[in-house]
Amino acid sequence: MADLSTQAPARGLSLPKINSRAVVMTLYLVFLMLPIYWLVNMSLKTNAEILGEFSLWPRDLTLQNYVTILTDASWYMGYVNSLIYVVMNTVISVAVALPAAYAFSRYHFMGDKHLFFWLLTNRMAPPAVFALPFFQLYSSVGLFDTHIAVALAHCLFNVPLAVWILEGFMRGVPKEIDETAYIDGYSFGRFFVKIFMPLIASGIGVAAFFCFMFSWVELLLSRTLTSVDAKPIAATMTRTVSASGLDWGVLAAAGVLTIVPGALVIYFVRNYIAKGFALGRV
Image (cartoon, rainbow, N blue to C red):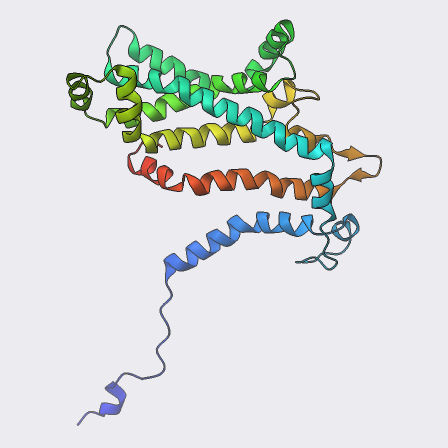
């Protein structure tokens, strides 16, 4: 007779199952958040501690770096200038892209596909290609070092992107809705604002998000087209050099504060972005 004790499973010796997805996601989040944590860590240290010994957290925690940014006009005005031209660019880009995308999605005309492709080619070119022409143009017409100059320059890249995103959302709306609204006596403007725009609200949110993010992080054009009055925070950070070297703590605090607006925009339009990915247009 076989020994049943050798055939019975050994209880209490089973190893816990490792969820590979959880491990991969944890490693990804750690890898993603490590630079942000290190930036926050540096922003709460003094320069002597940053350049001195290695530490995973501040030994002598200080908020003086943030106080410097919030009380020095040369610093906080960089954030104000950036927000001004970014908001202007987002409003202009979406306002121009809405009728253009509607035309591409609802009408067919000679060269429509070529024109649509030409719009996208503007997005393919690097900003350095247009830096010198914009500089000479704005210097000639008196727009150099103004917020509208940077906002209009960024439209060259954001309008094609917004048109491409919105056109995909608009194609998902049946044309019968347009015809029904006209039969009910709606004018085009009233139909577009009251009926059509709420149907593509997620697309507008996605387009506004990408316009905001590109304009917020773009450095070359915003630095080339400004000097003092409209200088953005990104340009201010690149010029923070003194006789004693870089002020690492202030630069780290400025970096943390630069992340905040983008994080807030992502939080408020996160549902719209998810719908954009689901529709396959983002």
